[in-house]
Length: 177
Image 1 (cartoon, rainbow, N blue to C red):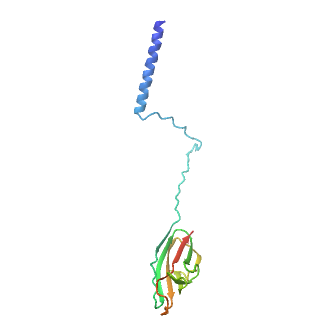
Image 2 (cartoon, rainbow, N blue to C red):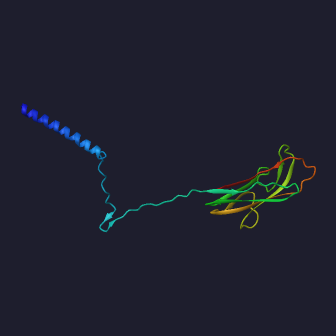
Image 3 (cartoon, one colour):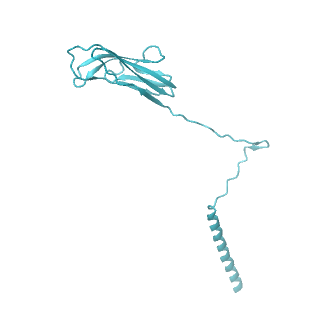
């Protein structure tokens, strides 16, 4: 019986050593890898196989507003202009306003310290290639292009008794989808 026990113990030790050495070899080759899932043959027939691979591209909406230098009006009156461009890849709504008069093109520049002192101005915005003026407030535009605009601000000559100082307004441009 002693010989049988010795043989069993020897087999157990040899088996453990071979398992440990197999594990070391497997680790050296990059570790254990589970078996791959079975191949789906459901789309195959006697003529062959088929599969669809979707292809897509998403382009986000984009709007770039460039140009539009500051306008300095003359005390002698007249019209001053500047140009700006709106580049979009989608139709857009253009909202034009002024800080002093909102969505009205008959506006004014206001004295920096005495809000009751104003000088009347008229603002006209035109779009290259379009007939007439672009209205204040909201207007729809096709986009997918570079739209060029001209801003013209007109004021009458200033009276000699007009309060001295800086008079300002702001032309507000907003393009949204």
